[in-house]
Structure formats: structure tokens, C-alpha cells
Image 1 (cartoon, helix red, strand yellow):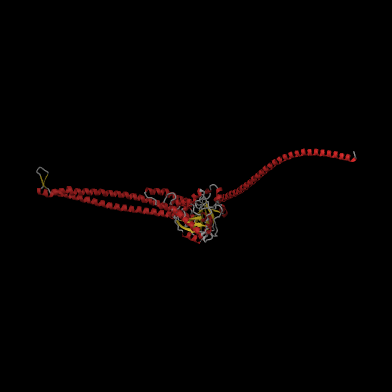
Image 2: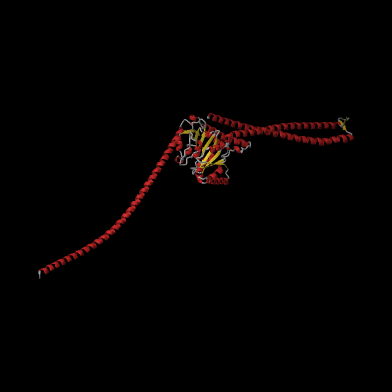
Length: 545
């Protein structure tokens, strides 16, 4: 073997060995690869599991973030509401504090600006009302005299209206106009327009504000200001900040506000309110039934009612219409507000629709006014100035006294007639007595004449003998006896019957006179009592002016 063969052989052996080694390595690597593939499968499965867990965690995180955001928002809203409620409670507490401070204050509004102390007036008004309702009614009932309708004692009648208005001394000599309107109808803004840029104004709020009836009074040389009537009927001063602070939300925090305030009274030296009083009412459309009751209670104390209606509502509240139809007895005016927000054709359409609704409900509207914040208030002021005072409550006592005086005059006339009748009956009785006396005298004369028709002679044995000729008997005596038995008897019987009638007439007239005297005395007493009470009231009111 040569060296080349040996080298080739060696190289071949070496290559075969290397091939075996590489095949073994390949086999090992295949096994290792198979193991790695198994590991990869397991890793992929684990990865998918981990991915699923990640997705679940991401969902949980998203849910938690949403819960966190919602909770954060809820807490933020609750915090905001809590702050608002806290503010409302603080406003309410502050307002109640101001009111209680004013109520407990020794100094009343009268002491500072000459306004009425109403306590004494309320007392005498209640006293007069009770006297009329009970004692006077009883006395007139016994006399069978009924109160006329214009002096009605019925609930909500003339007496109650007089009582309510007389206690409100700030309405003396004023034509009172009530305003009603649903929330955001613009009622408050219209009233403030009437007030102009004066010393007072109603608060304009984004929330309903008129929860308590508010009177706005024009008074010359007044320094203006805000007041309220307390439960004991005293007029108390309140500052502007407290008044403006009060809205329905604040009211809701004050349970039993009626036990603190009956009315607000705003006084201003405003030329637009000369001899005029404006009443801002809670209205009919409130969800609070008490608000509606307050409005119903006072609207007929006014001389006219102005209903402010937002044209954007499209129509009037039919429920309010029915309430007006049932309770309102005073002239009604309608103000269609915010006409600048609609085309004129649309305004015409709405006005026609409203007119039809009122017509169908049987409600008479005195006048419909179109109003816009851009318009001058000249037309409205002119209409207000022409409203006539329809409330006769101020003359109630005068009318009652005149009624009693007429009744007293009628009773006096009947007493005079009875006295006249008694005199006539007595004269008739005297005439009948004279007539009977004459009849009796004629009867006596006839009997004497009959006696003279006999011829008398004495008997020997005593006594007298009476004789009459046949002729005389038949022609004189018998006719005379017939006259006595017929004419005189009938005449005497008739005279006696007439005498009985005259006697009865005298007795009846005496009884009538006694009755009419009692009646006139009762009316005189009632008049004197009432006149004294009215005088006391006039004196008290004069002293507080």
C-alpha cells in the first residue's frame, strides 16, 4: 500500500467518523428540537393563558377605572349637592334668624317709619266681625230681618273680605292689582318694570321665588324698604339681603314658614304706584297645594287680576283656568309675554287660541295685552291706572250701618202707622160708644113715648089702671113696639159688634205699637253698639296713620 492509499484510507476513516459524529449530533439535535418544540407548544399555551389573564385584568382595570370615574363623579355631584344643600340650609337658618330677630325686636316698623302696628286694629276688627256674625245676626233673626247679599256673612262673603282687607291697613285707599303667572312666565320682571329703577325690586331668580304673597305699596315720601307681617299681626322690618335670599328652595328648608310670615310688604315712593298696590302671588300652577290656597284666599280681595302668560308655552294652563272659573269674582286681564320671541303671525295664532279657551270655559277677559321686554311699559301703566276699585269691602261697615238705619226707619214708620191706627181705632171706638149711647137714649125715649100712650086712673081699691084706645094701640103703640123690637135691636146689636171690633183694633194697635217699639229699641241698641265699635276702629286707625 502506497502512502497515498494509506492517506486516503485514513482520510476516509476520519470522514466516516466525522459523519457518524455529525449524524449522532443531528439525532441529538432532533431530539433536542423535539423537546424545544414541546416547550414552545407549552410556552404558547402558557402565553395564550397569560394573554387571557392579561385581557381579564385589563377588563377588570377598565371596570375599576369606570367605577372609580363614576364614583368620583357621584361623589362630586353629592359634594356639589351637599354644598348646595348646606348653602340652602345656611340661607334658611340665616333667614329664620333674621325673621326671629325682627319678631323679637321691641322696635316695630311703626316706631321707625310710621307704619301700622296691626295688633290693636286686628283686635277691634275681630271684635266687630264677631259682633256682626253672632250678636247682630241673632238680633236681626229675631226681628226676621235677613242680611242682603252684599252684606253676606257666608264663608268668603262680604264680611270676611272686609275683615281680611281692613286688617291690611297698608291697602287703605289703594286699588289693588294681583299678578299671577307660572314659573319663568316673566311675572317678576314685568312687576320690576313697573317699579322702574326705584328703591326696591323683586328678586329675579332661576328658581320659583314667590312662595309668600307680597304686597308692593306706593307711599309718598317713604324711604322704602322690605317688611313682613308676623303671626301676631305686627309689621316688621327685614333687610333687602334677607328678602332676596328667600326662594322656594329656601322655603322648603323652613318647615312651617306660615308660622313666621303671613305676608311680605314692600313700600316704595314710586310715582307708578300712586294710589296703587301690586300683589305678587304664588299662583295656581305650583305643586304646593298651600300656594294655591294662599292665592285663592287673596285674589278676590283685589280689584283686578293680571295673568302673565309666556307665549312660548303655546297655551294657558287649563287647570288654572278651571280654578279661576271656580273662584275668581274680579275682572281678569291677560298679558301675553315674550312676544319678541315669536313672529307676529304666531302671536296672533296663540292669542286666538287663548281667547277660544277662555270663551269655552266661560271666563270673561277684560283685555289681552301683548308684552315684550323691549316694549315701553306705558300701555301697561295706562291699563293699570284705569282699573276701577271694585272691592267694596272698605265701605262694608258704612253699608251695614245704612242698612240698619233703613231698617230702623222702616220700623219707625211702622210704629208711626200703628200709633196712627191706634188713634183712628180709638176715635172709632169713641164714635161707636156715642152711637150706642144715642141708640140707648132713643130706646129710652121710645119706651117713655110708649108709656105716655096709656091713660092712667086710680082704682078704688088702690093701684093704677092703664088703658089705651084700640085706635091708638093699633096705629101708634104696635108700630112703636115693632120699631123697638126690630130697628133699635138691630141697630144696637150692630153698634155692639162694631164696638167689639173697635175694641179689638185698639188692643191690636196697642200690641203692634209695643212690638214696633221693642223692634226699634233693639235696632237702636244694635246701631249704637255698632256705631261705637266703628268709631273705636276709626280712632285706632287714625292714631296709627
